[in-house]
Image (cartoon, rainbow, N blue to C red):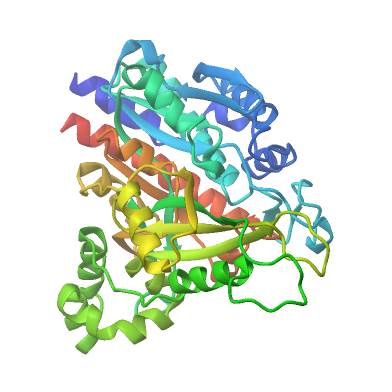
Amino acid sequence: MRFVWLFTGIILCTFRTAAQSQFVPEQLLSQYVQIPSVTGNEAPAARFLLDVCQQSGLQTFVFNDEPNSFNFAASLYPLEKGKPNIIFHTHCDVVHEGDSSKWTYPPYSGMIADSAVWGRGSLDNKGLAIMQLMALCQFTDTARNADLPFNVTMLVVSNEEEGGHLGAGRVLSRHYELLHPAVVYGEGGAGLSNVLFSDPSRIVYGISIQHKQGIWLDIGLKNRGCAHGAIASCDNMNSVLVEALHQIVHQKKRIKVTDASALMVKELSKYEKGMVRCAYRHPRLFFPLLKKRILQDPLLSLIFTDTYTLTNIHSSQSSINSVADEVHAILDCRFLEAQNTNELVLDLKEKMKQPAVAIKIIKSTPAALQTVPDKYFNWMKEAVLQNDSAGIVVPVFFPAISDNNHFRNYDIPTYGFVPCIFTADQISRIHNFNEHLPIASLYQGIDIYSRFIRIALKSSNE
């Protein structure tokens, strides 16, 4: 047995296998980006990636094949073998490109220019898929020649941008036992500068262990007030709705320190100095006292507060001098902790002080649960530090929403991590025009994922 693992280790030292060498990562990402896959039309992009996986010698399994819900797995071993499964998760759907005229390069061109791949989805989330795939391809020969103690799978799903119920949620509800997940790594944190006060240039790699819960609400009023715009009335339902929304959107924010965010800042405290170190070591004591400072920081305010964002107001059609007979607003709500939706609606109605306002839940994501860092976290940390010895790796609370909560609700250790360095400008391009992924970041991600698998194999043998 020791000889088998020694032989395996020698094989793993080769960066490019025959399977991987037929694809150039940046060119493959460019091709993938060129296939539009706005949520609801994922199938063509998913089939493209499925074909690449099959050409690479991976074992594939299609969970379902529909235009708006194409979900598949690509693994070192067939899922039917039932091996404990390390899952690399990615989604093939993207958000709409918006006004194409605002893009430097057409949004679905997949242009390779300025040392980057440009286009919708290059960063969210097609680039991550190529990192995972290229890393996984390095181990197909190893899996063929040795009976490894676990499987490694790239899970490609649809519908993430609209809650994941037709993607990750569907796969888990119907195929959980077949997946046999030991851990899941999906999107989430990344490597960032300007995180440490004591050393802003030092890169901090955040591996997310908890994400917010999202709940979208329709706030509506109908058949109130007069119809003519010339008659001023405090009973005008548009005015009533605006005032009700004001009570929610502009309510005083409360600083909340979750277990995940407390762990994050306590880890960061090891690299800070003075009062910052003290505050980070005792966040539940100091952070409420630093409310003003936290609320002024765009990132910290998201990590330590619930948010209520007004995203849309619309009304029934009427002339410009008439009050519409029905008006609705959409609230995008993000919560640090799991919410009871019935209690949430009652609480909001009380705060609005407008009993005629109707609140309807449009959609919600799974509850915000935490993953406690374990050996899989440590393996990824080791992989990152092998790639960047000057870096810092910490668990983080991630203020956005992703499929990760679907897995956490099945008690699966789940981490969010795109293993490369991002700049503030690149992050600002997510769901925006001029989205792009630097080629150097693409290769860094491939290297870190590859190192992670090697470390997992070595650790499983010890």
